[in-house]
Length: 132
Image 1 (cartoon, rainbow, N blue to C red):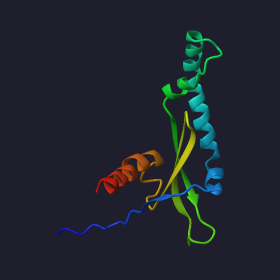
Image 2 (cartoon, rainbow, N blue to C red):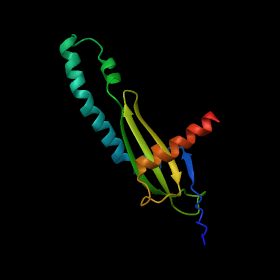
Image 3 (cartoon, rainbow, N blue to C red):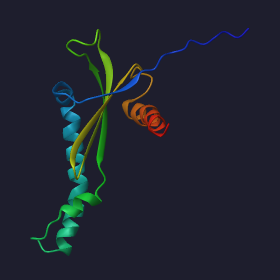
Image 4 (cartoon, rainbow, N blue to C red):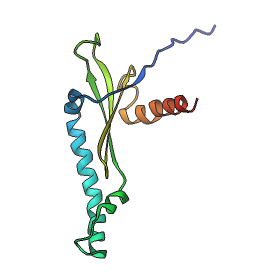
C-alpha cells in the first residue's frame, strides 16, 4: 500500500525594500561594502601604477565583481500581515553601489539556507515566469 505524501504549498514572492528591512540588513550591507572594497584595493593599486594619479580610475571598479550576501529575517508588517514571515534578503555591492532584493517564503530556514533559496528556488521560478 502506498501512502500519499503530504503536499506543501511553497510561497516565494518578491518584496519591496523599506526602512525596516534596510535597518535589519544593515550589517550585511556593511559586510558587502567592506568585501567589495577589499577586492577593489589591489586592482586600484595596480591601475595607479599604470596610469597617472590624476586620471579617472572609475573603470577599475567595473573590473571587480559584485560582493553578494544573503540573510534570513523574521519580519512582520505593521498592518497587512497577520503573523511574522521569513524574508530572505540579498545584498549586492559593486561599482553601482548597493542593491537589495527580498523574497518572502514559507520554507523554514532549517530546510534551506538563504543563498540556496534565492539562487535555486526563487531565481529559476522567475526565469520561467519571464520566459513563459
